[in-house]
Length: 116
Image (cartoon, rainbow, N blue to C red):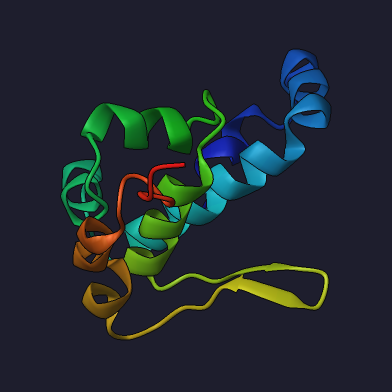
């Protein structure tokens, strides 16, 4: 049973749901998958390199989540994100390979280091 099911009869919730439907769908998906994995919010936060408070706000549809964080969360949960026919995030069994950002340290801070 979804956490949000308990509010479906509330008119204020219905109005909110219309304005925030995508955020709520995302919250439900993350919450349901986390529960299926039997993970706490703290466990998900550690795996996705964020805080438990942020996970709570996302699962309660209280915040618009940035794409980088969304990617980390979906990958560790094994979820995919698709818009139209484009796969933006593909679920993988090896989340550590996808999340490893050590390569980013090699990107120069200035793209053009030559003096003009």
